[in-house]
Length: 141
Image (cartoon, rainbow, N blue to C red):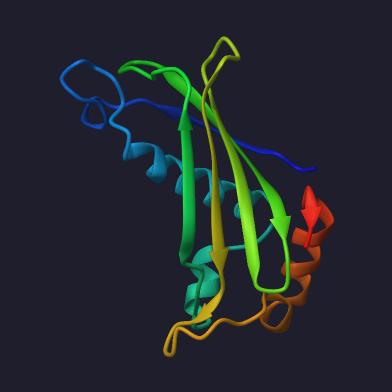
């Protein structure tokens, strides 16, 4: 299983009055991690969009374990949890410098045509990308 890592320096704007990262910002961090994973595997989400496709989120789950505060640097670990004909599930951990897990998450995605929003198999539009996901996925559906 391939795991991508991306460090994030917590910005003041991402926190609440207590200096703790506001919960919705974790979803933004997931996107950063997912984009890094795609890049690390040699592909480009921007390229997918340029070709007329999108990969919307169909489900997201975040489990908060410990707080992250202003001034910290955390690492987003991202991997392919499962990959099937139409759906890909990404797995995530947000980890403190000392190795403790701040949160875990998953997000589910499908690929759709930009103009019609009809689902399409990644295998049909980019067989190499699909094969790479199948190769590194924790589980194939």
